[in-house]
Structure formats: C-alpha cells, structure tokens
Image (cartoon, rainbow, N blue to C red; front, top):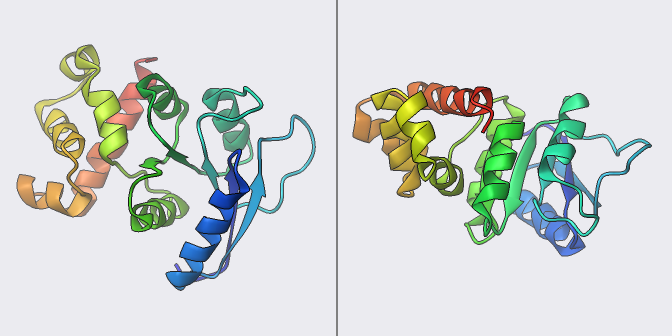
Length: 190
C-alpha cells in the first residue's frame, strides 16, 4: 500500500488538503494531495485514485451529485465531515461512499479509511453506523440479527477489530457484513 497515490480533497477549505498531505507524509505514505473547493461541472480533474469529500460545499452541490460524478470516473470516495447532519450522512451512504470519517476523529481513522477504500473495501465507523442505526425501520425490516449486531457495535464507537473479537468473527467477515449492510441500505432506496 506504499505505492504512490493521488488523492483529491474536495472541501471549501484548502487547509484540509494541506493537513491531509502532512498526515499522509507523517504516516510514510507517498501520496500527492490535490485540492478543489468543488467539482467542476465540465473539464478534467487532476489524476485521482481517491477522493476525500466534505458533504457541505459552498457551491451548494449535493453529496449525491458529487459522489455520482466521482463514481462515473471510478474514483472511490471517503467522506470527511463534521457529521452534524445525519440526513446528509445517510444520503452519502445511499450514494455509495466507501467510508465516513468525522473531522474530529484522529487522523489515523481517515488514513485507515482511505487505505481501505483504495483496496476497494468499504469501512464502517461511528458516524456511518449511527446514521443507519437510528433508522430503526431499516434495521428491523432489512437486516439480519447478525448484521444489526455489527451495526450496533459500530454505532457504539467500536472499531473493526473489536467488533470481530466481540462477535467471534474474523475481520474479513465483519467487513463483509459492513459491505452487505451498505448494499442493503442502497437497495432500500433510503
């Protein structure tokens, strides 16, 4: 995972991109960070292996539109947000983001989510799980007992390894549950 990657940070504030570049370098990741305050309606993007997207942009674009535009270019998306609006978080989940990381979380959470997304693995976290766990109709109507338990543990702030140990599962199995929950949420049209 230490090969060169190009990361596009889409956020109103360029300081977020500078902070990402600094943290990636400190982690020994040879990643180049580019910054845009929003996605252009037309035109090319810099070479991009991964997008880190804020949910609220000054251009009034929607998370769904931005995520779909990136998805059309086969660019995985990690949302990096204050997570103050669970509706926007759910919208991003339904649009297919790989992970949601709160800006107040340790930078290691963003790095782990970015690495997982680059490997094509969605990752769960507190904000992702909390947004879905509070959608009780979805949980009771669409999830198996095991999936609901995985979601609940994530919603309590547990990390993947802890969830796996608590359930007597492998981390790979927990990651499969996370992917299944995400797919069910998208399929439910929430």
